[in-house]
Image (cartoon, rainbow, N blue to C red):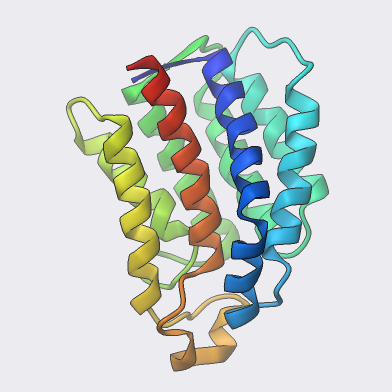
Length: 206
């Protein structure tokens, strides 16, 4: 795994495409155990990210991550905006001065992102939040000798499916208590799309 500045831009631009394609799916998931606005909010946020990143020239990866974080913070409503923004902002601190992210640097970044999401959302694994996906991907990258695009995609998919059987204890979904069981967490679903987009960029390099 060696991700260049352009790879990071391509990842986030591809995420925007995937979020738009799955807007109705994310909305449907959120209607079941949330406010029903996750799809709309995520589309708004990542469209703004694409508008910011596409014309810009970057020399280092932390600049891409910081612009992504700041844009998401200002453009996504609800709980998702601060959580996604925090993930990318914390990642920024681990990538200063880097022109390429190798697997070790990627693992440091995703670990910082997971820690940030946990702190901001006051949640941890097993509580049916986007942490499930981010933590599973981080664990895979940190523990594998050489991680593949297929493995990242599978880890994100599995974590998302696993969220279906959890009872939500954080956020709006917590109000549904045991009725939240049987539904995929919307934050997991959007995070899954994010890492699917990454896997596709990686496949182009393999």
